[in-house]
Length: 336
Image 1 (tube, rainbow, N blue to C red):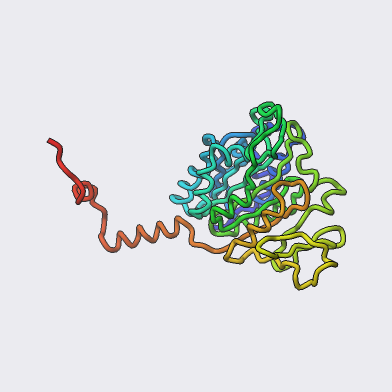
Image 2: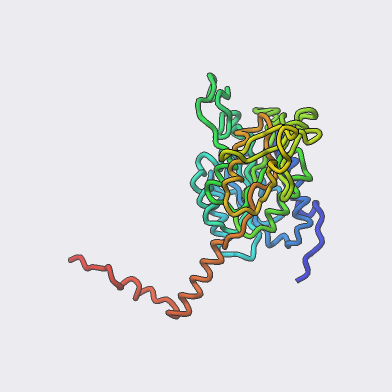
């Protein structure tokens, strides 16, 4: 079958895009639509599933199949689609509240099971749709309508959480860098298994400039740590700072103060997630030097592949199933 040639306009719908003016979601939408146009997959083979929140309006704005599901359950619904229709390209769009609060268990189990689906988590560190309450990624002391004296909750680190759940692909990008976002989307699409992408997304109404350390003209030059596979991890205007792995943790050093052989060379394909996890702990939020890029990308059999093989093996050994025989097998009893 010949794949049609698309433009970004082919993935736009007739629905009015209704986010606040200046919201980072617009940039992410444009990046996803542009990427989809060159992905090489027919539109009718693409599915977007979302939960609840500002980000979860996404399926309305993508000219593909899609479902606006229920709060926190998008990974579960998408897992069912991926398991029964492995021919489809399945994408989840969620937010820090939707995925990490009510949907926390659904997220981690989708990651560990390794269905072939792609999860985009828009992290603006606030509840935007419900008008500015603190979220599971808001910093300690965050003053919001629901925490007027400051949040006492310790926030999640989404990258650390995904790595702890044994995700086979974990990455972070930012709404303002469309080129970088597109590169991460491409890598996630090519990955066989669950791909988790945290996208720092500015909410200019309720949490404006939360990511200025990585987007400000002067700030980003000294704070953005780009993870590039096979390259030493250095950053700063002239690469004057670098990352080493010492005493079981990643540490930031002045490159001139250590031998160049000590600077960590990034290996996103390393099977052991220890160093990837250590890199995720360099920052617990975008408040200083913060890594962006692919933390981990490893090969592991997808859930639906193993499941299909089990079904084929069972069919080959036993033939068609017999429900009546199953019901009356061992472990039954009669109540008089």
